[in-house]
Amino acid sequence: MADLESFIISKFSSSYIGDDAACIDGYCYSMDSFFEDVHFRQEWMNMNQIGRKSMLINISDAIAMNAKPHFALVSLSLPKNITKEDIEDLSTSMQICAKEFGCEIIGGDTICSDKITISITIISKSDNPLFRAGLKDGYLLAYTGILGESKKDLDRLFKGEKIESSSKFYEPILRSDFIYKSREFLACGMDISDGLFCDTNKLLDINNCGLELISDISNEVGMSGEEYEMLIGFDKTNLSKVEEIAKETNTPLVVFGIASNNDFRFSCKPHHF
Image 1 (cartoon, one colour):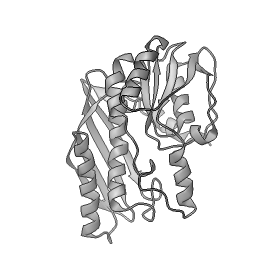
Image 2: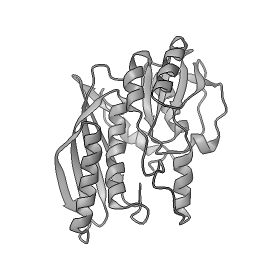
Image 3: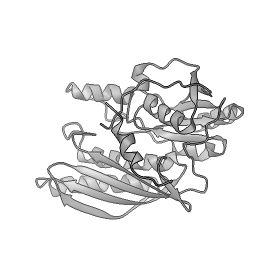
Image 4: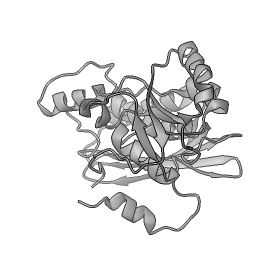
């Protein structure tokens, strides 16, 4: 199947489209949706977990841009049979999560629907945004964290099994300290939401370059979506600095490739259609 997401994006001509957020005059604007039976099922997650993850995956885009979230606009579509207790848990978890990152929910919209759908717009600020463009021949590519567990736990949920409440499927780990401290040494970056393989391809496409692999990556690691770890590129002369900050912030870091003048792309399937 063709990548319909890319086709849809191509129908809009703004020069601000193409990164995890649109950055205009020091402000960064981003939005992600979190839909029942697309991103989660109610039998998998309670309202607190749903509210918290919906906010985390949106704040992830701000962090990926080296931006600090300030405000959020929340649109909620809720079924008629939802209880006030459910709404309390959902809204409280979102507000607590936002506050942890210095973000305030300042408005939004609510409508009735047959399922829970959440769309959040984050307004953040950055003096030095981290864009996807900037990768050059010879630069190193690396990812943060330990990839693969989110997909493994999703597979367990599909089988009707239980997973730990600390699972990254429920609670993505956002690498804000690492990105904020290492920004001056990074050439480009983005968060990993569609899997390392697909997102690396996006980064290579934007920078018109290929890749030389320097470490093996299994399909279990490369195809695990909704990780919300960071994919970064940087000059090899900055490797020791980036590794030092990773150690300081307790951030696992795996250097897996070198940007090269070839047409290498990973084999991967689009996640959205």
